Image 1: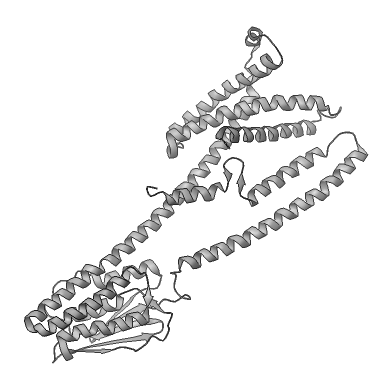
Image 2: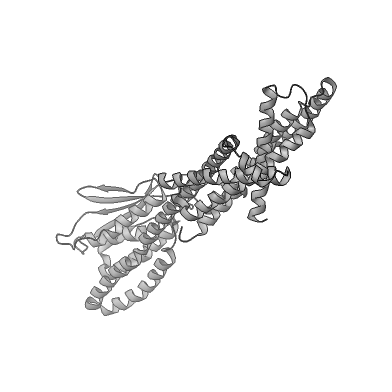
Amino acid sequence: MTRFTKHLIRALLIGTVIYFIILAIYFFLGRLDEGFDYQMAWTEYYKNMIFAVILYMVNAYWIQYLVVTYKHDLFSLKKFTIGISGNILVSILGIFLSRLVLVVFLEKMPLIEFLTNEKPGYYQSSLIIAIFISLIFYAIWYYKNRQEIKVKEQKIIAGTASAKFDALKNQLDPHFLFNSLNVLTSLIEEDPYQAQKFTTSLSKVYRYVLEQKNKDLVSVEEELQFAKTYVKLLRMRFEDSIHLEIPQHSSDPDAKIVPLSLQLLLENAVKHNVVTASKPLYIKVYEDNGMLVVDNNRQEKQVVKKSSGVGLQNIRQRYGILTDRQVEIVKSEADFSVKLPMLTEQVSVMETQQTIIDEKRYEKAKKHVEELKGFYGNLTAYCIVIPCLAILNYNTTGFPWVIFPALGWGFGVAVHGMEVFGYNPLWGKTWEERQIKKFMDEDEF
């Protein structure tokens, strides 16, 4: 269906609605008390439709021009003033063309006589109606514009969070590799054979780093097993100076933590503390009330290179994106502990995309079923009551008053149906969903 055809259908629909509104006003004002003339009603109807179609078309294409020209800047004071002024001018032109078609072409009045007899009063009521409908257009476009802005804002927020999370995860690669190479450099000088074994083990550990770094969450079980492997690397350098107490398995198979968080905490413990045979480092990993705790004795180095803050800060920031639960740090004279939240489906605000989609689909389907029940109930009542009123009208009076409840209620049923089945006479079926999808798919939006 072409844009012109859509405009024409909408113009006919709006013109019909306006006609029956005017007819109802005449009825309540008593202008139809002397009887209802169907021939006169039809004549007034097609006259009304000439005005409706021409005025709709000129205003619709003017507003379309504004949208293409100014886009989202349409509602600044200057642009809006230009828009309304243009609507007034094109409406006056539209009324003139409508009267020209009606009086000159249909009623056969000579053009010179028509131009001579034109008066400003002929334009007043039609112009008011045209401006009122134009304001409705602006209101609809403003709502559409606001929805697009909301979609854009949400996409920016989501994109920013995703980019931030990816950046944090990408910090792990150089951070881990840099520290591991420092260890390897020390081993080459102290024990070349151990350095060779370290290199072999490092390749296995680094493979795990590459596999896990792109995940948002990994199971606690995986991290525990990896921690044991990683400590083996540390023991190649520090031998028996490191003592690790770690559970064999997680108490909750479904519990998850951010990937490589346990490795980063073990690395920091070694980096910031003295690790010698006379002062061994004791690290204990255990679960406590939904938290994975990494505890070590404090024997801080007197001279230590200033920390980049990548490790612990990275963990806290990644948890901050995924959950409301906080990473806890407990520091005393003798011990240093970090508590990592163990996330599960019950306590984590991090849900899988499929779970969210399924829940949203269920909620949407349930809501749609309720809307369908309401619409079919409304339609059934309409189909029962209106025929009864028509019979009553036929048996009591010659004036067809039943047309007013039939049209009024019928219009309400039609609007109800369009709302339930997702059809908008101005923007088409499922307009909102299509617009959201369009803007979400645009890379530059």
